[in-house]
Image (cartoon, rainbow, N blue to C red; front, top):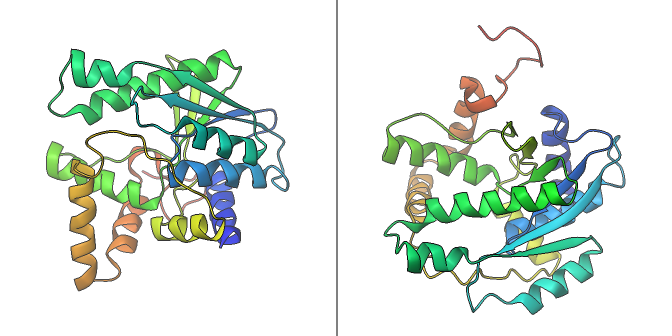
Length: 247
């Protein structure tokens, strides 16, 4: 199963030129299944991609008491990849000082800022996040349902204020493939300790897609294809080569 993930990640990296010679890539590792698999995937791709690059894992510790740091260290040490843990008080800011009713957006923004700062401090020019195909689709539906706009995140985003590039190598990989590969590799996902895990708007949309899939098993493929065909948010138009006219 890992070979299938490697193949899809390699295609995404090559399609969008995510990694180039001499890059130093910081992998955002929350400890969950997606980020653990992304780190392992990029470690394996270092062996046969036609470019040479460095890797470092970065974990932003949010400050939740139940976060299992020992399990995280065990994972990092078994991966053989250099790592850095950035201690923060984000949980206290979001849930205590600000007492946010909808904490996910603020938490995500603060976490991204912390990881970008840590990456720059470690000499990285790119940050890899573990968003997969299901995340792409869910974000599209969330933006339409809750914000009234057609939007999802880009495969590659240059953050000019940070002078760092964000990449998402798992965009062609379905979540069910992630789960199966994590089982095959005997990885053990680590919970964040966040009290709102599983009760977010994203989970609501995820449940909606599960329901729709019972009526149409092609729903995910159709939604993902619509993103590519529309060419929104930095996605290449399906069937167009890089640099081709998209007007």
